[in-house]
View 1 (spheres, helix red, strand yellow):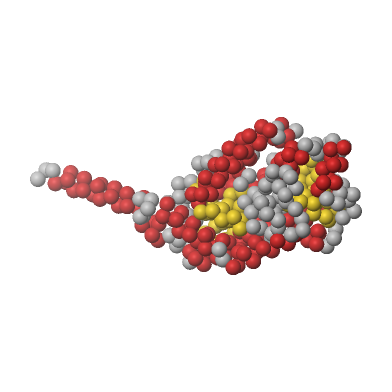
View 2 (view 1 turned 30 degrees about the vertical axis):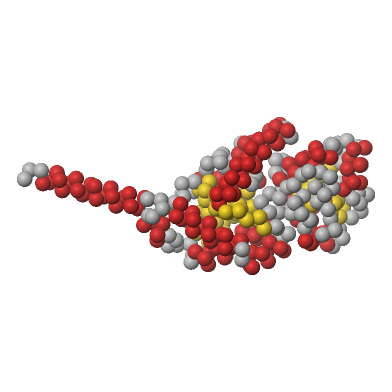
Length: 331
């Protein structure tokens, strides 16, 4: 008789623990079954209206329909995309915060710009599309071809200047990779972003521009000349322009965009998000935007995207030392 209250208390505690365990179980939790009960937030680490922002908004519109909840895009810009990446890594892993993960997290985490480890601080959901990078010069430039550019740079080491969107970013690193492969020395001129770099070239302050497709409308208008693109294949809009690889330089840069969430996300929720963004990448709406931005589709499912990120991380470790990027970041 005296043990009855103790037994009751024990049964109550065990029952509470069982209920708690049910709620916390990753693959079959009550929380996961009810999710999503409200709109999601998508962190875009780039300014509103830019190429990445446009593509992410198109993806979120379709993924939101698949999930049955809207996905609101929030732009958290700065530090070459790393402010947004840090905000994503620091968010609650409840499935209500997702965002774009620039592949440059593999480089900037090693350079100290990003206080997070891309190998363990994110849940990867999808790789979506790449970017079309290229080397462009003013229409009045004496460089009619990439061969002209390289020959002049060889004859005048360190004299040819190029504009890029910031030290350590894809355009800077890609151009230095090309310079190494071509055996030339260039003088890099960092700007605060691609828009300012473009104006530097249009204004005649630098010899060339290394950027994503910000140059495209100006090439079509006859103000700039595109010497080469950096992808695996020629871009559909500029089929007559060769790639770096076709020109004899084994350099490919496409800086693919990816989507993820904070680490610790419920696997059942992650699976639903992966499926939603898979459908979004395959949608006609996204293809229309991607084509307009010269963004090749490079879809990978979350686990494969994570493997890709780890591969790029190892490559960046070597590249950082080769290009002495730590010294450049300090200078």
